[in-house]
Image (cartoon, rainbow over all chains, first blue to last red; front, side):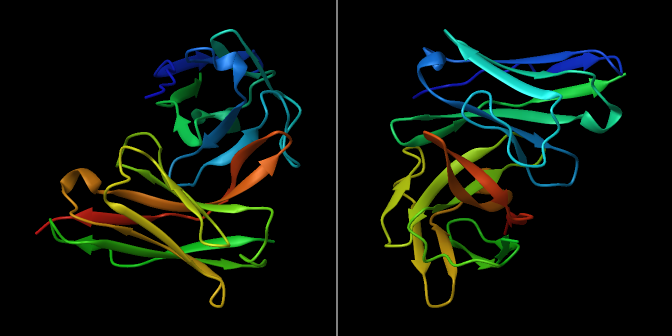
Length: 106
Length: 122
């Protein structure tokens, strides 16, 4: 079965750029999306189709996808961005999620 | 604004069947643009897609759960349901429902319900 791998944790200082990677076999041939989940809340879509932001998501969130790796980038990271981030892609009509990355804003 | 709300028993005994319903408000489930999905999250762990259903009743499931899962839809009540049979403690999780929304050339889950915790225990 298809798997997506994320680092368990990433740390960033306020105002700096955070990058969260998601790796999978030929992931660049698929579309990746990203969800943000804060404690006690449900996930929220922040990036779809590799690099597009839904309405209401700040411009500091961006994404890319090439080769075997999709990347979520948060520019000018704010304390409110501290959360767990999940990548997700589709493989043979099956939705696959990465294990999640805890972003800590120090 | 579309909202989804999960409902059902919070406690299920091992070997029994877990049954949950997701009620959709602020929009019709009878819409050819969307699928409607179930995703679960064991306490402190990551997300696992269970399956999704179209308003017509056509469903597709996670192969790892397919033998135990049935998802159905009732357009007259604007809700869809999940049944997971032969549950064990490993099925303890927060169960979320979500709209599977077409975005460009792909799909994403947006929005999500608040989730409901189901514990499997005797």
